[in-house]
Length: 206
Image 1 (cartoon, rainbow, N blue to C red):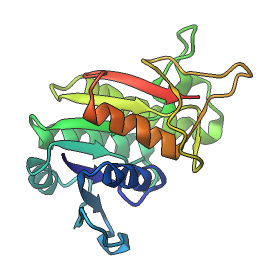
Image 2: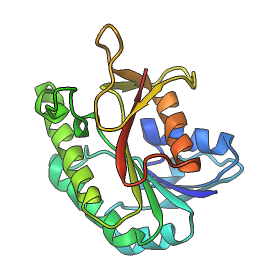
Image 3: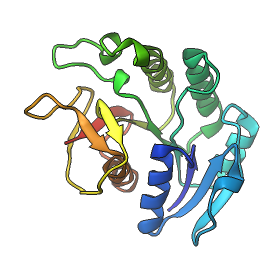
């Protein structure tokens, strides 16, 4: 496959790029600073501002799947930023499939409480923003999948072993909800290659 990865230099995006290349996919890595992307076989770097619909449309037209791996942290107005980006994706992608890196705040607790309503204050604005972006994508006609991470995601080991769930936060027996960024990328590329959650939100965790 040929894949467009938006946000390719971020913590999650860079691991998605690595996982995709390891599986033999051709990757167009899009970022505001393409000079930060190391040249590798199968990898093309492109400049992209995520709200530029025309440019986004041009890049999306040449690939099989668009993978969005950005988060609203640059403007100080996370909800406005996230919804603007989601709106740009809806306007630009047409029939091209979207697999989007969501936020754990888009999930619910087992009792139905939105995770975005109970996260610590330091993360609340971004959690609400990512939930709003998901709602914008869900309301569209896009062929989408949104993959929310566990409550905690950080660089770590690639084990290839994790659990999947639709819209409910997964926790282990001790109440921890976590996944490595490497295993998150494995779950995402599995979904790209073998779709199970079309027009759905899902999550992966240990």
